[in-house]
Length: 425
Image (tube, rainbow, N blue to C red; front, side):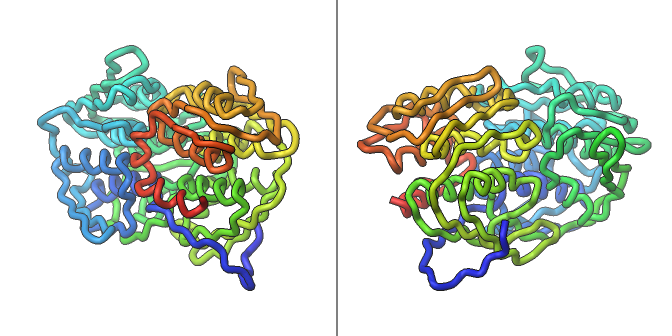
């Protein structure tokens, strides 16, 4: 993306809530640190409220006022034995990262949540934590509730079979409590918020490109408290970028996170012909700045396998944009979409077909032929916040009324979404 030189235009200026991924991680790491951490711009999303419930259940003191979360860290040894099951609501990030924290604590915990969360795969985090020495039991083979009996951990060298920042983060959080070094080797880069936060909090963490891939290692350490300002959530901003492109609205998304491991959607959009410019205000601990969107004609593309982890949350949006692009857009290698809050491949394809799009479902993705005029429809978002937002973008250009069922959980990730999206009508 270009560095922005913005002038001569009166674009629509919008903001998004604080980044969910960073907020989850900052709160949990602050709880593990010794001392008082201050997290400004902490996400008000429902998923992040689930992480605060974890802190409460583990006896960590915190307070929030005017968008600033203050956490009194308990240190690695100060977390309390939970007196009840730990509710994670619908947040997979909360459950997976918390399991990594609890793997090293010498007590038993049980993590549960909403039925939607209890359908999601969890063996991917259980296996490496078992290898480190924790006792991790899944109630239903591959799914939660999860019972964790933590204890003495040993560092491991681990290559996740599925590219997942949540798995990587869970293992790194356990590695902070293990004897010896813990190393994660990734074939494909995933978001690195955990590594950036650990580095800022004084943990001995290193990342290098080795013969097997991207090698990240961490050793046991006490964490320093942190004072951080969380940038706007790029996944939420992506919805507004898509809205700007389909409606032809010059826009600026202000003060948003621009971490390169999260910018895959932006890179694909540029390949499709979108004109995006960045005005970066800060680089550490997370790149942040303003993102300028200048709409124009879009052309179809194919998303490469190695790009998938950096835009997994934005693939439903890409499907909607592909209906307005010239040519055939192909998404493959995204089977992980079937293991989210819903089967996002099936849900997206059904929703786009209802709107009149030319779309075909693949085992691990979808194919869209465009451009297509979208029409009046009733769509089902499958109680999935990402599908609800993506289909709402499609509704902006539909030639007739669109009703979207199953939009109840949008506040899990983007409080104020409907009001902000209305700015593009």
